Length: 275
Image (tube, rainbow, N blue to C red; front, side, top):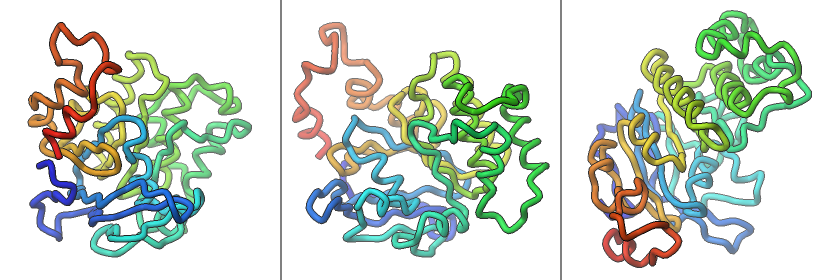
């Protein structure tokens, strides 16, 4: 732990995703990721935690092929999905391979209906008979079945459910979830995370989850990585991270009565320990 190149000991044949020492540069000059490595075993729910600006969303975009839309590229290392390199693939080809990213901020089409948004998720499939898949989405998110109007009129929680349901329509083997709890009430956060965990267990979808709500993420995940300043600084099982004193201090609010907020902390304290 504490090494940016740390990897799990999962055998290669049991890995769904392997990110190998990647560097990501934006606009040819801005280095965002500095040697990031992580593994996601088949069927696992793995979480990637860290402060804003650490590079978490960039890591997901490096996997899903979305860096090119923001003038970014992987300049070193590679990303492999089921052993095959996907670093330089177009986003639609990555989806066809079986990886679907649920973007931060939901990104639903507001002037389309719930059904139309769901059908859009199946766009890359050769099989266009999606009725059973829509029924499956409604089974996980029954309140969406009641919403027949435009998606823009849905509540924030319902829009997040629709975004995840749209991903299900692609029949992914792996789902990348970027901040699914953002803007949701505590009650809805619990509901959404319970459904994410249920899909992981019942459908066998491998998941890589980026989340600011560290406590909820670790409660749901099997394994976790913590990222700061474009590097992985700590990793371990979710249970181990939950009980790690550094994680409790900096991410779970367990730093003692004398600390009332994070803004007064000096980042070098944890960087010195972890790096």
